[in-house]
Image (cartoon, rainbow over all chains, first blue to last red; front, top):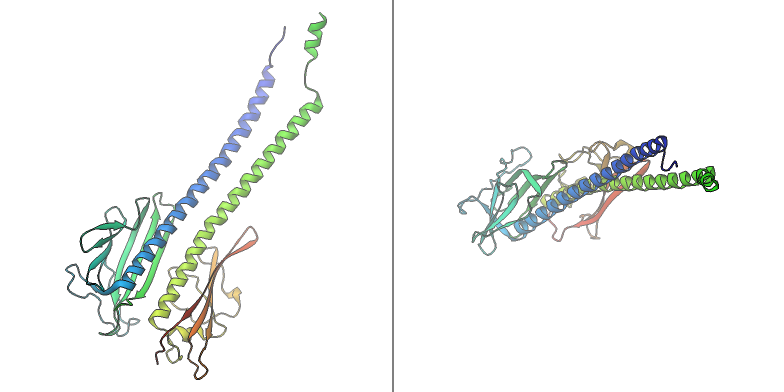
Length: 177
Length: 171
């Protein structure tokens, strides 16, 4: 009684499986990897956009002065010609006094998240630990003593795997000045 | 004896084997094609997110230019409306971050190559509009930002259209 597969048959089947399965798995792995990349990119774009909009809206609409850490002295110098005169070096933190004379500030904390701190000390975060904020900088100037401060802000946002980096640069003028 | 002979003769015919192989290969071909298409769409989506970021970046930059120095009557050559009045109103911005206005507007889009991050080109068409009938003050500017790139022979584009306007004239 000769039952079962021959050695050659098993060898052929194994060869076919060992050829097709790795190919399939490689393609599936590539697709999953690509999906992960897209998710990471979408995440940094979403968080970067949110941080930009939040900072821009709050500072632009509510801010009346940009001040130092003691919340007393204005920090935006008067530059009559900002094209020829160098703009002040960006600082890692911006402190703002709003229309109701409350204070708030934006900075990047030790975990590389953008943080917003109110006058009562409450801290809220605009980004989470899935992304990393780097090269952040806030600077400002005025074109005359009676003109509103012009704020220049920039930061780079990177995903946790350091695959993608999106740079953000934005400039705006205080509207409630 | 007879049943032993019958068992020996049990096997797949050539046609059966061929049909099996055809179905199997068809399945694999379709599966691979679907996967490749999925990968391609996924790659396009990745590039689209970057393109959107570049379009947003230019929009933010133009908003700042508009807010800082609108102009309106075209006496200030650094103003937004003066730049918008330079025929034919199309500017190529292929650097990121944006360093400043390009020296002159482009006539032919071929002079705006796909060099932004190796594969994109970004340009804006500005169209100044004068609402007032009494003077030539520019009250509005139509802004049409386009970021384009080519992938597998197809041209993809991310547009942003907006109108910048000023509420108070400044002379």
